Length: 347
Image (cartoon, rainbow, N blue to C red; front, side, top):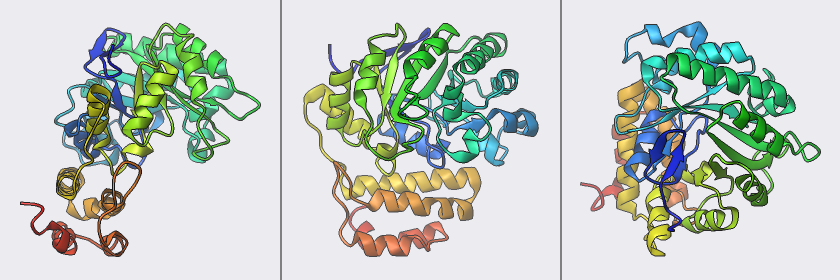
C-alpha cells in the first residue's frame, strides 16, 4: 500500500494522511485555506479556550462577526472538513464549550492535551492534563457526550505529548484512557512538556503507540521535509503525519510530500508560487480582520514565505527584504517592497 493513503477517524474517511497541526498564532482560517489549496488533507484550528467560548458566546453573534474568537472558530471557504481544537481542564466546562460549537459544524472536535505554554498549563489544561490521567479521561468522556448530544456525534480526538517530563513518560496510559473514554484518534508529539520545542522528538514512541492502539495514531514532531514524512510513516507505522512548524511559511509541504510519497520525487516551489501564495494569504486575512491588522500579522508570515529552509531555497537578498517587510502596514506597501522580486514573477 502507498504511504499516501486514506485515513478513517470514527465514521469519517479522509482522502489522504497529510494533516495540518493546530499552531497558536499561525493556523487561522486564512492560513488553513492556503494549506488546503496546497494539498492538506485535513486541518485543525488554533487552540480555543472552552471557557472563553462559554463567556463570550460567539454563537449568538452574526456569522461574519470579526471578533477574534468568532474568526478563530470559522471554517475556511475551501475546508470541506476541519477540526476545532479546544483546551480546558474541567470536564463539564469542556462539554459546555463543545456544545456551543454546533453553529460552526466542525467535523471533529480535538482536545489539546499537549500545549506546553505556561498560560495554558497553569489552568490545568494542555500538557498539564497528562499529570492527571483520570481527569484527562473525564474530559474526553464529557466532550464525547457533548458531541453526541449537540454535534451529531462527530468524532472527538486528542493531541498529547510523551509526558510531563523525562521521569513521567505516561503517553501510553493517557492514550489508552483517552481511547477508552471515546477518543477516535490520538495524535502524539513525542517530546515532553519540559522539552517544549527543544531537543529532538523521539519517533520510537509514535511507533510504540501505533502498535498498541486500535484507533489511528497521528505522528508529529520534527517534520520539515517530504523525506521526513516518508521516514516517519515507514519507521512508526502511524496512520497520518501532522505538520506543525514545518508548514509555517511552507504550505507547499503538503503538495511536495504527496508527490514524494506517491512518485518518489518532488519539485520545490519557485519564487512565483511562494509569493502568489503569500499574497492570497494576506488578502484572505485582510477580508477576515481588516487590512491594517492583517498587514501587521503578515509580517511574520511573509518573513517565513521568503526565508529558506529545509527542502526549499531562500530568496535572493532575503535578509534585506525581511528587514523591510517587518515595517509594512498596507497591502500596497508589501507590493512595493517586493517589487524587484515580483516583477516578471507575479501577474
